[in-house]
Image 1 (cartoon, helix red, strand yellow):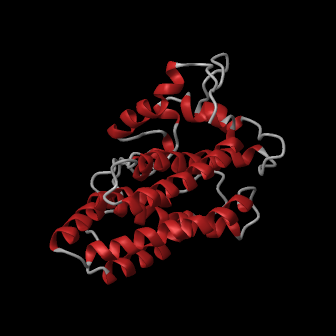
Image 2: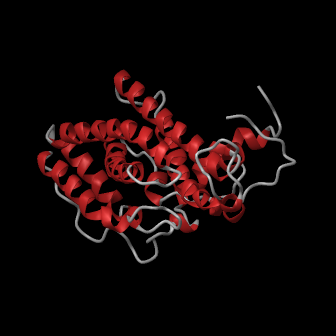
Length: 265
């Protein structure tokens, strides 16, 4: 991504949603901007989180795999954010409250098992979502048709590791179960309606739950107990309300751009 001159005012959620789509983009009307912003923020934030594993993955093969997934998500984020405005401005100049990503993707990596649990929950949801979008007639359909193939790999990668960890050693089983349980309360937000998105998200919940339960059963793991959302968190990320770790992550992600405004390389 390239820096943008400081003369351009930082985007807000309202201004981003109202910004016209770039010429030649997939979006043909302004209605596509709001859902593109939400889905683009999901992909951007999770891409950054996975990128934090660079140099820290448990084995070289996973170093490459996590980097490739991060790059896939970054590519999705660039296309989606470009439908809502200037991709660099939206990524680097917005304040925390202007981001519309769900809270699940902003959660810290934790250990490797925790990251896999987060990836299993999100990629299973994203595959279902993009499958629905790809079969519809919304401006996001062309992107979804291409991205769903990438997301299928992301989901398979997370699923295979869940099986290996759950049915592995006593410690690996305990760690993946701990990660699944800790992140469960953030999954309900995935199915909160997104204004302008031509998908019935609540209707995807049953399919998502069935898939997750199938994987966990095969991995000798237990579906977490308790609610998958809290009264204060339901839809919170989509409304610009984020958890404490997100502010620190955002400061790191935006630091270079904000430190050298207008720089080019």
